[in-house]
Image 1 (cartoon, rainbow, N blue to C red):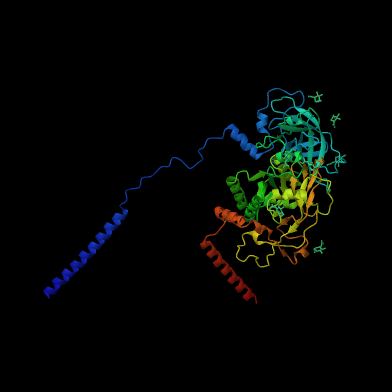
Image 2: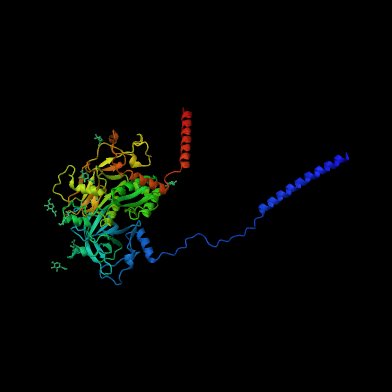
Length: 564
Ligand SMILES: *[C@@H]1O[C@H](CO)[C@@H](O)[C@H](O)[C@H]1NC(C)=O
Ligand SMILES: *[C@@H]1O[C@H](CO)[C@@H](O)[C@H](O)[C@H]1NC(C)=O
Ligand SMILES: *[C@@H]1O[C@H](CO)[C@@H](O)[C@H](O)[C@H]1NC(C)=O
Ligand SMILES: *[C@@H]1O[C@H](CO)[C@@H](O)[C@H](O)[C@H]1NC(C)=O
Ligand SMILES: *[C@@H]1O[C@H](CO)[C@@H](O)[C@H](O)[C@H]1NC(C)=O
Ligand SMILES: *[C@@H]1O[C@H](CO)[C@@H](O)[C@H](O)[C@H]1NC(C)=O
Ligand SMILES: *[C@@H]1O[C@H](CO)[C@@H](O)[C@H](O)[C@H]1NC(C)=O
Ligand SMILES: *[C@@H]1O[C@H](CO)[C@@H](O)[C@H](O)[C@H]1NC(C)=O
């Protein structure tokens, strides 16, 4: 009994000892966890804010120039001292601004909305040298019939106190289809410089004001754009010089230069960024040296695509600011989109502004300028794949349905429209090609081309064209050239990636895979852009999307069954 008692005590002791040990170990362990040296509080003295210097005055001027391209702040600041005897340069804030990019002149009962001014000393222009002022005016009529109140241009030259004052001698209304008095109409004003013997050497004015009396102090002042081709020694286009010396088709010597102007991009809710990439890469393959867009409002992904092009291919893509003329507030993008939609006629009239601004800014640097939307492609056919070869060919081929044997030169070469609809219900033509190559996949088109005037697009010669409308030039030099030639569809066509207005035409499409002549380069370049910009989903994202689709289908099925 005694012995067993002692044994029990011993066992108890051992148990207690073990427990104590465990507790100690645990305690020690816990201690070791908490045994981090006491954290000392770090006082951060600085935040991640921008510490760069303020921009210099020159940098600020450049930033303002970008914001308001027509406002000549830089030119104003370098005016020579002294009071002109006639007229006076307005102060920077003595200008009647409207909607950021416009200035206003009230002239009798009319309102002139001024967007820009351009120096034109092109060889073929009979009135040259002159300054063309691009405006919207609430006055419509036929040219030479329509009367405008007397108006003067005060032309301000660098380092000269006195302006040269001339009458506005011409109003070219870039619209010929009528309209009411509540609208504003795109109008090009001519301010001809006094002729001197050596017109080519004539200096371009820096700024221009419109006034109703010769020596008035103006309340508007716009920069005169004059950007001759720096790379070329001659002011006029060298290929054209060559063509003059030889016969008109001898254009091969210097490669022709092409660019594209696109109207205001109004794609706020629909992400067409991927289509934009494919279109831009095709423009590049066709020979476009530059594509200029005007920004109305775009989906952030589209803005991202264009910003990326501007960074990686400097000079190839340009995006310029724009607003509407008539007085609609240039507010945020959602309202702007609404306003463009709410008055379609006003929107269309406003489209002439980007087209003509783009044309006049670039006419000395390019030989042909195309005006397209991002769903349109002038496609050379047969063995021709470049616009330069196409234009050379266009000189020689007959004019569609017209005799033009008398002509050596044409204002523009135009190409007939043919629709490539989306055909969402039809199976893919190329089963193995992903659907994200839109034009490469959509090779089915309607059978018939539109006629000569319906929805054509052209390549406009910068030697001859004066006033541009979406589809053809409304004004040209009329100095030896003929009006636009319609190139037969055997040689090229305008591929238009949208639905035809006439739905009967949707029936019996035909396959037209002319675009595959740009393969594999087109696909490679588009893919590379998708990849770089992060358009391609990861495997995980693809699987998740598949799973989600399966769930959605199930849900729909259940709903359908429950309804039965
Ligand atoms: C301006 O006045 C003229 C002549 O009275 C008239 O024909 C024209 O319609 C008026 N224009 C506007 C915009 O009121
Ligand atoms: C220019 O305006 C002046 C003054 O009103 C006028 O006498 C002259 O005839 C005008 N010249 C032209 C070419 O229209
Ligand atoms: C312009 O040329 C003509 C004839 O060549 C000459 O008589 C006249 O003096 C010249 N005018 C100027 C301003 O140089
Ligand atoms: C241009 O072509 C015409 C007719 O084909 C020819 O008579 C003339 O000599 C050519 N001129 C040049 C400079 O080649
Ligand atoms: C163009 O004309 C010049 C002389 O008029 C001649 O020397 C040259 O060879 C011609 N070039 C072509 C491509 O015909
Ligand atoms: C296309 O073919 C024609 C006729 O065979 C040829 O004259 C022309 O030079 C070719 N054009 C191009 C760009 O290869
Ligand atoms: C629509 O297209 C069909 C087929 O080309 C043509 O026969 C018809 O006249 C067109 N309709 C209209 C209204 O243009
Ligand atoms: C496009 O926009 C969507 C929605 O904002 C965004 O999730 C996606 O990442 C964007 N794609 C690219 C390539 O930036």
